[in-house]
Amino acid sequence: MEKEEKPGEFFKTAVLAIFLALVIRTFLFEPFNIPSGSMLPTLQIGDYLFVSKTSYGYSRHSFPFGLASFEGRVMEDKPQRGDVIVFKLPTNPSIDYIKRLIGMPGDKIQVKRGRLYINGEMVEREPVGMKRISTREGGKQNMMEYIETLPGGVMHTIYEESDSEPLDNTDVYVVPDGHYFMMGDNRDNSQDSRVTELVGYVPEVNLVGRAEILFFSIDESASIYKPWTWFSAIRYGRIFDRIGPARQG
Image (cartoon, rainbow, N blue to C red; front, side, top):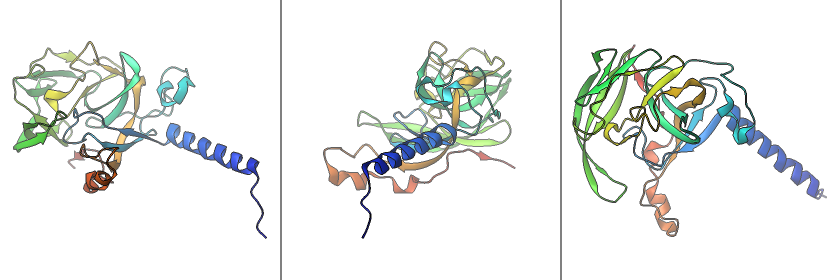
């Protein structure tokens, strides 16, 4: 005869499962979802991704519920230009942001007439073509798609509405030591380091991890009240896509 499972055994199993999930989330991989279009076309609204917590080591922001209060980072590894990074918003660390790392400590960053300059050199971009994308309000919008090549041969895709939007002409930003300059790939629809009163320079301690891989993606046509829309709204072709940029050899 099979032994009847005692209530205490079930409780111990549940506690162990929660503990293991917490360890994985804290030290290895943490799931995030994308609520806005600021990283289009790389990341879309409704994408779900895993962030590697081992990529840059650990800080107090790596641990849930404010369990850690130490300064700096341990087991530290430096991020690379072009990484897509989840970080704590400097003006409100309870909020997570995800952007691309554009400026390293000591870099001079500027946008002039829509073109990105790093240390006085204009960053190369190649036009791909006009894209017509859906907006959150249900409308359509024309965006110009480019392939941008950052110093070091990091290639990624960006969107631009035009070269005359509010953030297309900026002052020169000098990135302080121990900080990074982040930008969204949807250049004219991104609150990023160009918006100094909200984001500004991101302290190294605020880095949570590097975005690695999509594990799920669903578009806006899905409705929680209409189960028959769930499966047709899944973006099957995006599942298991890697997020990191292409790097020229």
